[in-house]
Every structure is written in C-alpha cells, then in structure tokens.
Length: 219
Image (cartoon, rainbow, N blue to C red; front, top):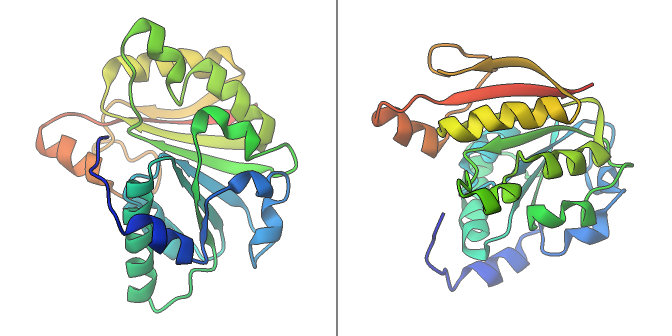
C-alpha cells in the first residue's frame, strides 16, 4: 500500500513507550517485555493503520500482541489509532508493542525461545508475478521461517481478497507441514473465527469481492 510521508511520524513514534524501532534487541526474550509475561503472544504482520490490532488487543487483555510494519508513515498512523482505542477504553497500553520490521528478515527479530502462538496475515501484497512470489508472506520460504519461532500447535490466521494467492497459499501451507484446520471462500458467509472487520474487508465487501480465509496449524 502506498502512503504519503507523515513528517510527524518519526518523532511521535520515538516518544511512544510501546514502539520499538529496532526489535532485533528483543529476539528470544519477547516475554520479558510484557507485564503479563506468562500470557500468549500473537503477531500481526503488515499491521497497516493498526485498527485491527488495536481492537483485538483491547478486546483481549489476557493476551499480548506485537504489530509489525516497515513503513514509518504507516506505523505513525498505527500509533495514533492504537492510542485512540486504548484511550476510548480508558486503558493503559500494556499488552501491545508496535515494531518496525521487514518481514523478509523476521528471523532477526524472533527466535525459537519466543514461542509465538499465532500470526495474523491480513490482505498482504499478492505479488502476482512469478519472480516476485517468493516475497509473499505466505510463501513456503516465509512459512519455514515462521516455524522457527512458532509454539507447538502455533497458528496462522490468513485473509485475502486474491483468489490466486489463496489457492497457492493453501499449497504452501500443506507443503511445509502445516495443517489447514479451517478455510472458507466467503468469510461473510462462513465465520471460521471470531472476527474483527478490517478496512480492506469493508472495502472489498462493498465491491462484492468475497474474502477468502483460513486457519493453519503447525503440526
């Protein structure tokens, strides 16, 4: 997603206690960064404007969340949306970290000691051209990376509007040792998990584009 530069983003992010610009320092010790050290940790890759993760984290104070993106302007918007949602609920931001990270270098940030229990991938770039497909967040290469730090029976929740990406992602999951425990080609019709509607989801639904989704579990 292209987004214009936000001049204020860098300073606001640096001043936010829940933002980490260099998350590599947290590798293999993420639990130590949360007040609720014994609670499960979930990640959203490509958090965009942060509305999904903000609502999810506010709704589930018994879980810890990490929202990742690599674009500073997008992270700035996420920061503001997260603060707004927690303020609305009169809560401190105590179960969520916002980080700047390139997903292709995810193993610099997460290791086997982190035991992440769930990854959310919502409407990622489909990278339709053949030579670019390996950049997909659901590509086999990436899934092998996730296996490094996912907990036993760790899950991936995946949504997309793109038919080709969805079909090929099913193959990626099956070929890398994940079990697809639930899937749908119409998420509005088959609510396969308790859901929070994303901005992309609203937009595509208004265009009568069906949302595909699945839950994959590490065997």
